[in-house]
Image (cartoon, rainbow, N blue to C red; front, side, top):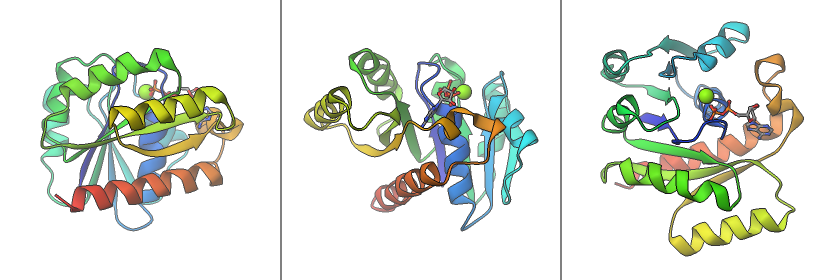
Length: 193
Ligand SMILES: Nc1ncnc2c1ncn2[C@@H]1O[C@H](COP(=O)(O)OP(=O)(O)O)[C@@H](O)[C@H]1O
Ligand SMILES: [Mg+2]
């Protein structure tokens, strides 16, 4: 199972999603977390707070991402840089599943559509609404809009201070629960192909 976490926009929760998904997937099998963002925030996070069962590979180039994805078996999760550049397109051509983190709100629609435009047809994809204020009108409008557009939403992760702290705190239990649900949906969808 090879998974890319991607959105052309920065600050939408890609790294957070990659790290939490790696943590929940690692409960069942070893996980390789590939940090394709030259900023290295996922690698730095795991340096500070290692997660049992998760190995990090820093892969800040197309060649290194391809090499990391050429491994056989197991779960590989790629955290991508923003921008939809070649390294991202290339990674999307090498995975089975794409997870697209997004915030809610009208401004987020066009970056999401930009990513959806570069996901190959053979790749399963779904959105994860991150840092969600689930009690707001904005959130409900966002969910309704994606449903109407026929874009699958695999999960919602509520906004939590403990998540915003990143590597400065333990992984937040309720965010882990939310990402566990995303992981389950992802597995179900990709096994159905
Ligand atoms: N569920 C959440 N609750 C609160 N803050 C969040 C949540 N998910 C992400 N964030 C915060 O949003 C910011 C951007 O997230 P990050 O994962 O770094 O995005 P990206 O990798 O897309 O740039 C970070 O400060 C992160 O802690
Ligand atoms: Mg990031």
